[in-house]
Image (cartoon, rainbow, N blue to C red; front, top):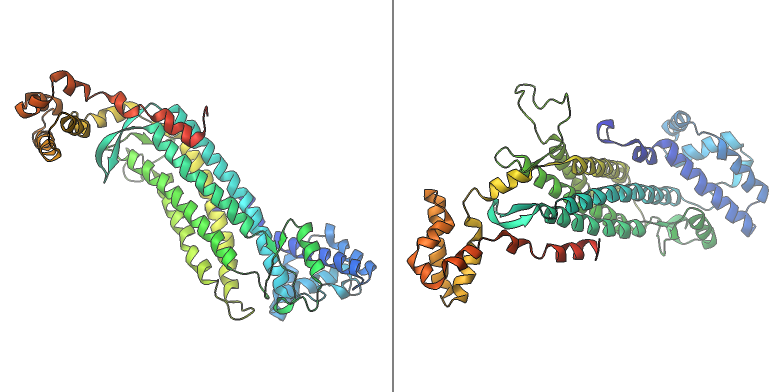
Length: 436
């Protein structure tokens, strides 16, 4: 997590100040619930809230932790310094550190999810706008990197929209998956803290009580969350890779916006490189790299160990901060992406009609030619385009075997581009909804 690839809104969620504020709220709300039960005096619970307007001293907490070697105890000691030892006498009553740590982590993940969802909405908005803008902009579709058949730039944006929309739904589900809290005490039996305390704290902080938490919230929830971030990161890379391919000099169907004064290379002044999408490819690798550690955190010893702790202290902020930055960078790239329709037409016509080979193949079979013979006839003429630079339609018209099955008019009709785009409206309706 470095400033270069961070947005302050997401970084703030993972700051020590935010963490300690959430710790305080958990302890204070738990005190209220315990006072309602008569477990602790009401005046003690109310006195703890005196720290609500106080800024916790992070340096002081770190100083105490250096001695105690325990972060939660260090915080509780500092809290007692603020509200007084008598007021703090019943703080953390019956609770264990994981009650505070795990509930806080899930609150932070929920808040991070909200920012990530907003970032995805921006990406989706950009993709939808560009899809409609280029709905009928014909370009060549490619398989194996080789010209296949015509498609449209709008369909390219639309399929990325559909992919990101699936990712958004997954993230909503992942957010719900981690929206739980636990105030169940040592080994999760509620022996020293009543379940109503957990219910009160969770309700106050927008969480659902974890059905069974042992001493920690089960880490399969978190594994699903980080796996979802990994899938979304892969979708980011999928879009970035397409743009990088489009910007290759030999293709140049689209390119990242190149601003006034921007420099592409320290050595070659002519360069305009796809640096943002290359950066996104790298950031996606980082987010995916945090998925496996999250999966490995699921298997803990008995009711609790802390092998997951060091992992989560790193991957929770790093994965969310990185993906948040990547989503907004991607949205900016899409919003300002420069599209070259004339180059798309030029590229599609580079092999002089070759991309219409399937239409001719099907026409021959419909005219009574066996599929094997039809394939042989079409490929024979196609290879002349590849190897000799011939024009595909001209060769077909001059091929006696082809002409025996197809008239000149029938062959000519097979080179109509509109044939390949006739169902674009149907696909758009499926992706964006009728009338969208």
